[in-house]
Image 1 (cartoon, one colour):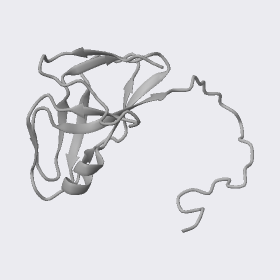
Image 2 (image 1 turned 60 degrees about the vertical axis):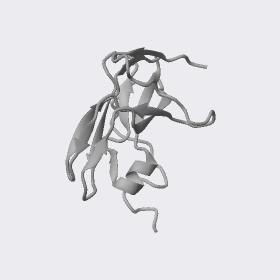
Image 3 (image 1 turned 90 degrees about the vertical axis):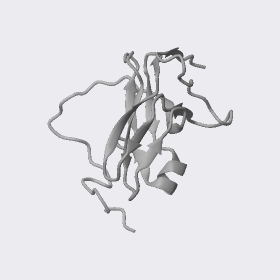
Length: 143
């Protein structure tokens, strides 16, 4: 098991938490009140910073309830927080709905999933091995 070190930057900030022990993601909470107008985005602070273990990342993902009911989602989903980042965790939310969306301090705004990152390197080659799929891209596997 990995341990994630969390530091409150705002004494009133809520620490990420899971609603159920088997949840994949930790809920992230707004540390400020923000109104996101229709068609606009906002950067919302969580009031926390963290230290992730090496070879991990935190993926910031939308909350399904806010997306379904209000058409508000994480703009760069999933957003990546790298293991060496020590600044405030912030969430970019976009309002695809028709009404302003009010974010209150303490509101659940996103979820964060901790994921492994494979150690890799890139090697330039003159050609790639053949596969059945080949260069078939978008829609190539049918409907």
